[in-house]
Image (cartoon, rainbow, N blue to C red; front, top):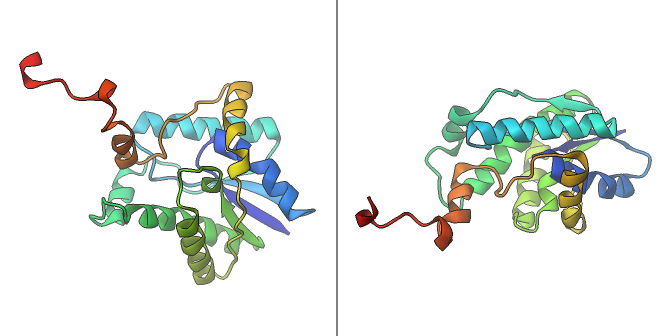
Length: 191
């Protein structure tokens, strides 16, 4: 049987893959890309390239959902939910495609590299993943990849991969920098 590993980027894939393989025994693992949540365009491009580069380096089969830049799709799926509830919507839009692909290809289950981050909402990921899997007739395989988080930095260095500084959506990029004095907007009299 095969597990489909939804991947948000190369470094997170690198931090997750060994832990997943240790937890699934003889089952094979294939990587999956579908991330319409990643913005802006150049961020999306860099993460897509790092995913492909690491899959090639690890000789890991890569499966791609729609790869076009998904700004309009992402905003449409959020349906005006830009606050905290956006994360559930974001997980769901990506897991729907992963679950659909896992079911179509008769894989035993799918999981996600989002589980490598200590900044992601693991309980919400489990809840959304499990519910989405049921809807598509597959299984969500929860595995805590957080022990591999430090390894994401090493993977990025070793394989010369782009390493992002926020989860991907433009809202999280704003959340990351809004309270950082170094990135504060200048006073009006600055101009």
